[in-house]
Amino acid sequence: GRPVGLRPSDGQWRPGVGDPVRAFLAYAAVDLVSVSLRGDPPPPRGSVVSDVIAVVFGAGLYVLFLLFAHRWMFGVSPLG
Image (cartoon, rainbow, N blue to C red; front, side):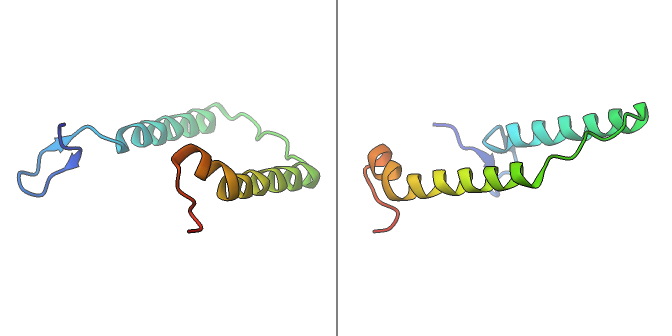
């Protein structure tokens, strides 16, 4: 297939994986400026309980993927 990213040999940019990331960051920057100029108040803070639930749930998904799902999806265990 076509090469992806910046090729040092000719210095030509090829669209690749970084493009959606740059687009998301550009959107975030425009949104931040827009909110700043509009003067909207910041959103209310969430509770500590919500943060704990999110961290525990995320850690559980990570462990599930590490121990079981990675082998099931890709046929290789990341643990060896």
